[in-house]
Image (cartoon, rainbow, N blue to C red; front, side, top):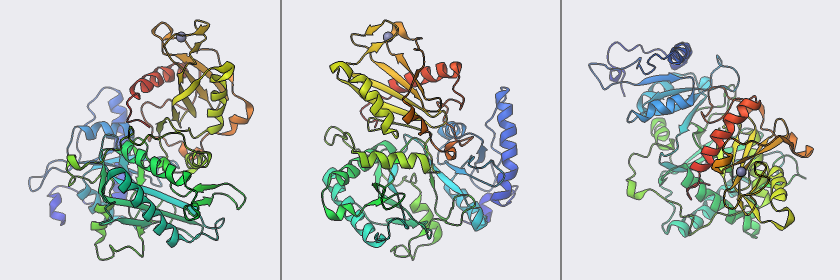
Amino acid sequence: MDAGFYGNGVKKTRLTERISNAMQAAEAEDAKTKRGRSRLCNPFMSSLLGPAIIWKYFPKQSEALEYCRSIADVHIFAFECADLPAGARRFLVTSYEHFWHDYMLMDDDQRALYEVIPEETPVKLYFDVEFVKDTNPQANAEEIIVLFLSLLSQTFTEVFSVPLPLENLVQLDSSTLSKFSQHFIFPKAVFRDFRHAGLFVTHFCRNLQDSTSDDVKKLFLHSKDLSSPTVLFIDQGVYTKNRNFRVYLSSKLGKKNPFVLYHDSPLQDLTQKEIFFLSLICNTQSCKSEDLLHFDTEKFPVGKLSQNTSESVSRRFRSDGDRPSLTSSNLPSPFPEVDKFFESVITADGLMGRIRMWQYFAESQTVLYSIGGDYRFCGHIGRHHRSNNINFVACLKSGTYHQKCLDVECKNYRSQNYKLPLVLVNEPASNESAVPGDRDESVPDDSMNEEDGETFDAQGDKLLADMSSPDDY
Ligand SMILES: [Zn+2]
């Protein structure tokens, strides 16, 4: 793309400078929005010589998503930069072409950008895999990758009755001396959305978990030290709503570990731009809607995972900078000990309660449990409901929980706070997850006072009601 594409009247400043200038503008505009003024203006719109250019910053992800809904062919990128508080991200909406153009003008060490994967958007099959090198001296990365791809191909064929398309497979490497870290992106395996991709990966990981093969065990590696339990090297925490996925040639801010094409990749002859376009998870325009992959949970029920996998999920949730803002699942939550506690409550006295679903709110360190089965005890009526279900809300920060109820009569009921057993209370997510500006609208503020609790509960109930489709995991 030549510079003329931008047309006259567009300043070709570098992305970093633009970011710094535009951030202030975006924040000022955000303040204006709050006063009821129009927020959607396009600073780089309309050139007489070329197509309209959209290049717009948002302090909040939710606003960027909202803006994108009304415009075709634009996408959201999250970025970190030195001018922002540590861990904070801002959001840029533009086309892939424009993004690439300005991305290339940045200094190598300033690229700390992430593709935002909106829900309801088709996605290429993607994987984030990693392990610590020191604690796994026996691990042979080459061997593990070959094994991973071969097992993945098998499962893919079993599920979709077609071979896993390996054409243009993008294998990016961001490994350091101490850590092996790669992304795999399959441009020809496109799922309806992240949920379907996530369900397939969950199914695949469960197969691995259940396998007794010695080969498969090579994919399970020690996380801390040699005596720590082994965990699967596949990060299952990256299939969440509005996930930020680090892009080709970007490092985490301040680190010098950009994702580059793996030396062994057959794509060496492609240009950087071609690799970039292939590596974008949501760049799926060429895939026809009838070719989108659906994961059939009726045919392949995704049930309980074993302890190892849930530990893997737990570990990722606590340590991964590419954090989710919200997750929901009928799999074990990232806090298996908390799950266990509520399981003991709802199965006491011979009752057959079960955790139907959970949601984790990183900002408030709260887990919302929707209870199914025959445990329906509600403090409001002092007995079990006949048919309506109840929820538990566990606040990990304060170490307390309370009960809510889905019965219309109990709509505004919130039980008193009860204490969670002490051992559970040291589990909250790391500070890394506190990302101002990267906050889902449904996620409450950090402080969990009585009033926030109410707001949270109302939103949580609604979310759970919305979650009842079998597509959710
Ligand atoms: Zn009730």
